[in-house]
Image (cartoon, rainbow, N blue to C red; front, side):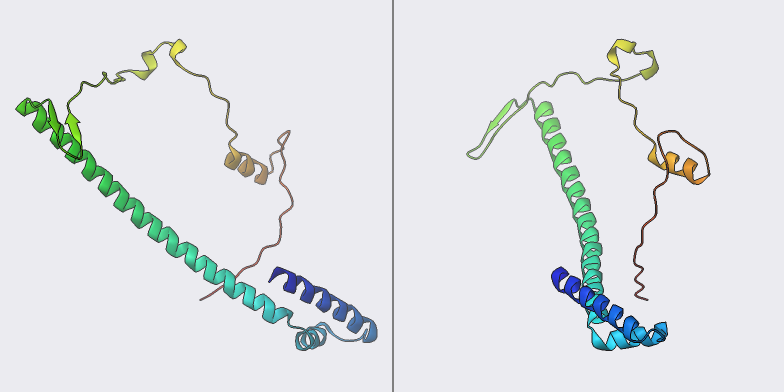
Length: 167
């Protein structure tokens, strides 16, 4: 599709140049209407836009599906954790150390003590890892947009984008 669109664009530009040279007094609307009749560029652009809209619809649907599946994953994970806790509690209370079945072996084991933070500010500095500073890009852009001069940074030129309304 990209190659065909590029080819049609070149054809469109060639015809536009020829028409402007042959009919220098032609107004912009006449030129546009004539080119639309001589080329397929607008139809090709329309086809690409429709394809892009289809892709965007799929992206939106997949985002919803992924969110639903993530919720399901969280529910399954919570359910599995609760079952694990139940098994541990029952085995511990019943003083069962090991269960051997054809497809698994279950046994109670001691776990290492977890770290409990009671006052993070009281922990000595030797236990803290320094981290590289991270640039606040949003704050930098906001300051530059506000007219502030900041060494080492500036706002670039904006680009051109399309706007596609479907409602």
